[in-house]
Length: 204
Image 1 (cartoon, rainbow, N blue to C red):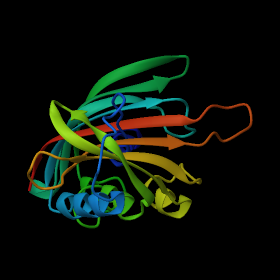
Image 2: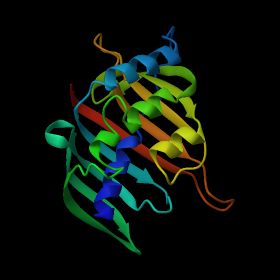
Image 3: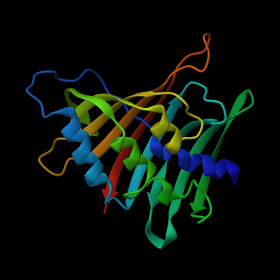
Image 4: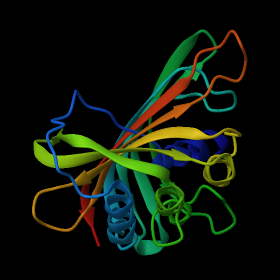
């Protein structure tokens, strides 16, 4: 059960594409992130795909892909690849929410969920350019997330985060479609950890 709980933690993290088109003018980054957070608060189901590059103590996830919903009490299904000693293990998962677990779907989706709180916590937001995400136009916003906010979402993190948030720019609502997070190294001889998350098939 502990391993399955860790799978849901990844719903708070990351995404990155190539160099954006930097020819502006662009909407203000803070406005884009705020609108994306408001839109994402109403999302009740989503397809997610994430990957972790680096080693984060207590967080063995390498890759995960699946679907999560708040309906029927909350459920997440999909496949995961986790570090297992010197190797790694791939397996399917089907997790139903436990009201007493901090890793239930409701802890990450919805108006009080971790992803919404992460967006609300972004500071120093600056629009960096426009690029395609999943074959649709999006605006990329760079910023920071304070350690206190990051830790409230992912307990293994105790440092400020560097983030990039992609916000849909297709003429519809400003949807939160991708996230990239960089976690500073825990020691002088370690490398930063990068997590990428893609969010598609979003439904209210």
